[in-house]
Amino acid sequence: MTHRIYLDHNASTPIDPEVAAAMRPFLDDHYGNPSSGHWASTTAKVALEDARGKVASLLGCTSDEIVFTGGGSEANNLALKGAFFALRLTGDHIVTTRIEHPAIIEPCHFLERLGARVTYIPVDGTGRIDPDDVRKAITPRTILVSIMHANNEVGTVQPIDDCARIAQESGILFHTDAAQSVGKIATEVDRLGVDFLSIAGHKAYAPKGVGALYVRRNVSLEPLVHGAGHEGGRRAGTESALLAVGLGKACELARELAPMDRVRSLRDRFWQELQQQFGNRVVLNGHPTHRLPNTLNVSFVGLIGADILARLDGVAASTGSACHSGRIELSPVLEAMGVAPNVGMGAIRFSLGRATTPDDIDVVVRRLGDLLVSAA
Ligand SMILES: Cc1ncc(COP(=O)(O)O)c(C=O)c1O
Image 1 (cartoon, rainbow, N blue to C red):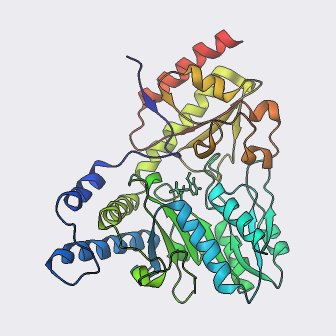
Image 2: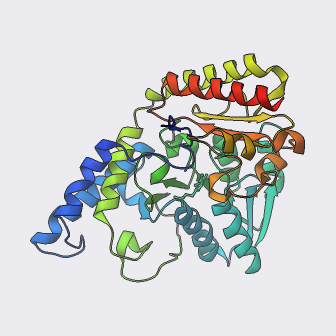
Image 3: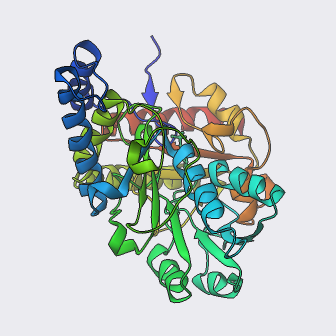
């Protein structure tokens, strides 16, 4: 049987067994509505608030600043549209970057159709923005700056604290999409200086379909879903204690960043071995140091990443981003970084996880070697 190797953790992670175990009783027994006032609701209500506390503790904020959502996309939509609708009498301008996930770019396009003006600031060849470009983009009409913490495709980490300080000096709200950074690097909201921060459960060993938005206290936000007053009036709908408990447990585990040291050294060894085998036929995409510890996006120059992956039977990895795969086009992120088409088309994103082994890496390096010798 083909040896199956999973190197696509930026697309989604497996559910951690401890997360699954924490959720189990909420599948079997605790079905009560957390908002009811009787015996069947008590366990669900307590668990929901305990989970909220765990998410808050990872982010270094208070429980009332956490809104559970249906994932990272919803958290991003809530931040962007919620801030725009709450502040539309004050201003109409949003600053973001050219390399955001579609869950930011598309809400921005939607808001542009409603009359918002959006500035998409550029990145350099490593995928990093210049905080000075944020300063230059701000106008008296700016209401929100949204810059992703770490990029899903190349892993480049942005200077969020510097950018957030610039926004704060002008009294402008700051959002960061931290879907990829939670559990990989530090994400405390006060250290970053942000007013909103999005997280996605399934990038951090919790299930799909759950996420959260951090909303700094006293920051007003128009809900996207109106209804009863769940989540402090910021997101109507009966909360799923089941999913919240999963996210809470995952966030508790994500506080421990030490496992990432092992992942980083495995990732670095992977890159060194590719360089040894392929020399200048392989190129690193992303920042050499300001990068997520698990992410290795490399281009096989002059080849097509999708073709290589198709022949790497049993190895799960991505070309471009898994969220919009199936397209043989230069990814918008690599394009924004100015990567030449003959380099960018050969890109493959390998994203390692807690369970990746040295043997997984050895197998992939060896198989790439076999494949590309026959392709040469
Ligand atoms: C940076 C980033 N933001 C947001 C999302 C969307 O999260 P979700 O799939 O939970 O909606 C993703 C998922 O690919 C992502 O990588």
